[in-house]
Length: 165
Image (cartoon, rainbow, N blue to C red):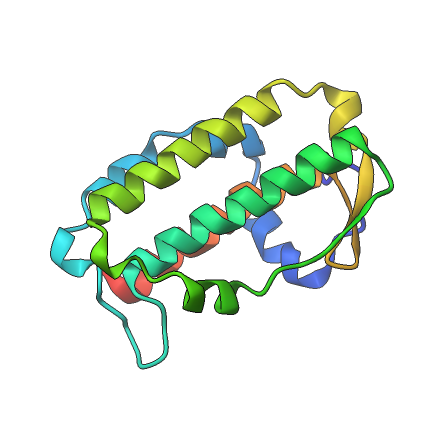
């Protein structure tokens, strides 16, 4: 279910990764935390190629993006029809390098953000999830933002598994 949103092509992968799971089931799953906590601390600075993010930067990117998704969902649920800007994840990564922070702390921070995401979407009813606005120039419903949040996580966890570990 895309919550009445015409899906931009680059988000289709996120939807495909969800399969038949609801976005809340993915966001509530403990599997993510088990996976992340098994990453050795010495892998925090590892990059699979020149110019790619480190493990810690990738997890920080998940945190940053999730905060952006939260803001979009909250703003659109409170002010349907609003137009919100995009963000440049690479520019953000350049402005914050978590190299001095233990990987366990990077993960703890992400988990705190996730709890906030669950609280936000947990208070929304079906009418809230169907409210629409613009984000990064694309029409999106609040429910679709939830799908993007979960699919974005799955996408990057797959990258961690395939290229980093």
